[in-house]
Amino acid sequence: NLMGSAINVESTYGQGSIFSIDLELPIATAVIDSKQASTKTIIGCQGKARKILVVDDKWENRSVIVNVLQPLGFELLEASNGVEGLEKATECNPDLIITDLVMPVMDGLEMMRRLRSSDNLKDLLIIASSASVYELDKQQSSNAGCDDFISKPVDVAELLEKLKQHLQLEWVYEDFIPKPETITDAGAEEIQLDAIVPPPSDILILLYDFAKRGSVFEIRQEAKKLEVLDAKFVPFAKVIYKLAKEFKVKQLRKFIEEYVDKL
Image 1 (cartoon, rainbow, N blue to C red):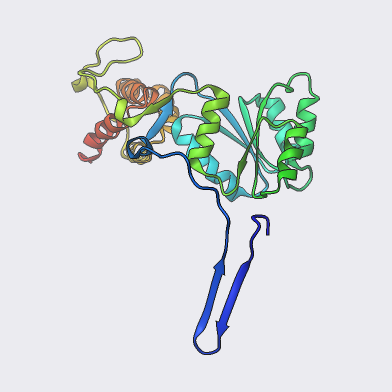
Image 2 (image 1 turned 60 degrees about the horizontal axis):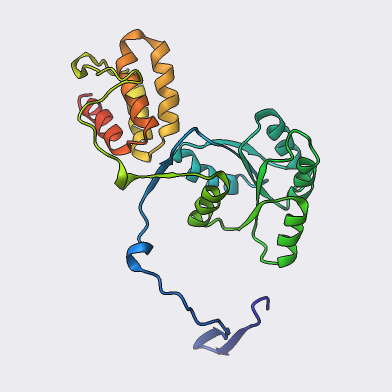
């Protein structure tokens, strides 16, 4: 009905049913270049890790966004309603909030109004997310203070495009990563590969799993833990930290794989 049509049903007992719809759609005027349409794999973004707060009462909706953005190096925070969202926003000061509209305790519209009335949080970037296609909901979201709107189920390409636009991101693509001749640490000093001592097998397998999934944020966190665990693991930690920081996922996976194969 919202699109000016209806579902028609023709049913014959013992034979089956035919479902049909009639839609009037505009003729496409733009021709998409097949070369442009083939998207490259995004594996991260340049600069510091951005902090994203996802507010939704359904964990599965939050999980979709978290699982898309966390491997790209974003720091993800979660809240299950508007009250928790306000608390997390006040405590952590995220770079951007993605919020559902319909939630218990406090809905997304009220949370946005309170954020916009806060002296410290009024300039936060907010993207509203809803399964509703009603223009009224989009207008209410805009009136409450959101900067943009994305539909559910979330389209990954649309989500990444909105983040790029509002956070002024520069994506890092897997195709564009140069392969260095040597691996260096943060101090630009060459690391002697024969001096590298890998961590215990359980940690190594965990790191390999992260590398296969492209979870560079988790690898950087584990690298920091390794540096304080034992001094002998520092060279290994520096290598994986640098590769993860520069989003060199293929080299990172291959590097860890060499030690996993020796277990």
